[in-house]
Image (cartoon, rainbow, N blue to C red; front, side, top):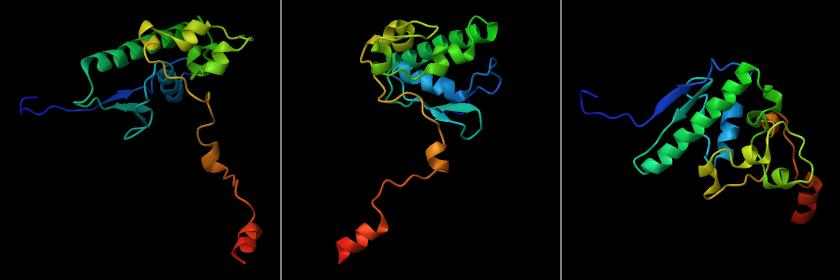
Length: 157
């Protein structure tokens, strides 16, 4: 800027995406590209805060941009009606190794599109250990896997 300052973050507003595509769909799909999802819905709900730092190489920033462009194309296919959001790679993301290599593949998109959506995704592929989970279920439904309290009392005696 005119004062010599350089911002190191930007906010991408995803609130106007059509086709019932959610911010969760976009962030989960980034995992298929081997990219850790940026901060979402902070400081503004429905946005991504992207913070490329001085430690990110130009190649890494380009890779992120290529992933976002590819995701934008997938969103366009949904918005145009070419594919339903429920049948899309966006809604199916992230794709695990087990899912992509299973004998049964009944999705409306190819395994290639699921696992390697762009050529750059082949290098150092990250395979998520699990597919999509309910974002807040564990926060709202506490599940204790601990032994009962009596077991601790017995151990103390």
